[in-house]
Length: 562
Image 1: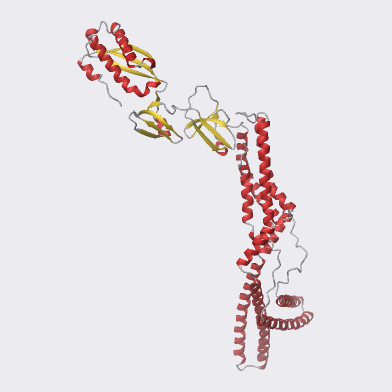
Image 2: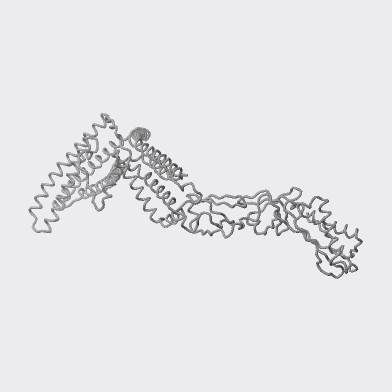
């Protein structure tokens, strides 16, 4: 049967991808423009006027600094002056950009640079993943912009506070008496920092207005979610659905093909398949797994959705990198699948305290214990490192008993086995009481199975005055009498063997031993038979006037073991 786990990993992969893609959805619908109020528009105009004033001031300073560069007496002075000039020109460019952003009310970087930025091509994979990185960058652009503006506002506010403190200090100095030269320099310095304060304030207001515009144009979380879901299910949701549908259809197709292979190719249905059949089956499963993983990649390629294509490829590369580390482990499993490893079908395996027969090796291995009628289904990976061996003989023991057998344990418990599971063995004693053992504890009790045949040995003593007949005549008469009683009680059909022998010459008696082998059907009557044999021996002694020594009655009194 085709193993359904082949579809499990790819299906879970694409479902997880379907649920984890929200931040990457493309927004197809244009954002509706948000109209500003009259006060907001006037604030924009005021900011633009301040930016224009700063621009004029920067232009004047640039012209003045250009003259300073030309008049520099040495190279070091010229380099220092040039650095100052470069800084002023940079500030002018920043001012122009801010003027345009405030006037437009949007990010003027959108649509300006129509040419894609090129990656530093060190590997071909960088080109493949470029759409994914661009999409991630685009999806977080607004957050990064807001964060940068907030940092800029904090920086300009701190600088503005320092400039105000500096101007306050200059104003205090100008109120004091001083020379005209110092007063002139302080006045020029104050005018310079007034211009710096105006530029800083203008930059602060521009950044605040930009942040306000972004927040005003931002939509609520609910509206953004609705817009995302609508767009996602219309485009990328459709592509993911197509990918999952393609995986399911291919899985069904491969499963039908596998069933046809099992049905029509000779050897697939044999209990123990040949190496060529196993190799064919393994190659087919591996190819099926590869096709099911690659199918979504093909779907996204044909749909030209490079973001999903990049994500899937990245996931597959990560999976391949992970598989590289566990490849030796999977190789061992493949060897087991081919039935050429350390565990083979039809052999005997010791697992969890019990011997098992390896019935079938597959993604899940079937183990059976024929005697206990137990079966075990374990994953193939657990079989790695185990060792099986051939069955030495046909009557090799798999379990000491079966359900319905009567056993005697080392602790003296005698009962019928009424339940055998992987964990417990349950015995029912005469009278109906039950006793439960853990599997390991039961086997440690060395159970004696009575259900095939069992033997009873009972000792009976007679007086020394019968010494002459004790080894011949009395033995024959006692055996004959016991056969008659067994026949009368209806136990004769279950008697396998009966023998009476001279046992020993004890201190006060000549002991005889009765050895009786019975069929396992009489196992429940074990103790009853013991008592009956003792009774029949006494009856035989009475009928034949055999003297039973007094101590013998004490030494060999029957003990009720039930």
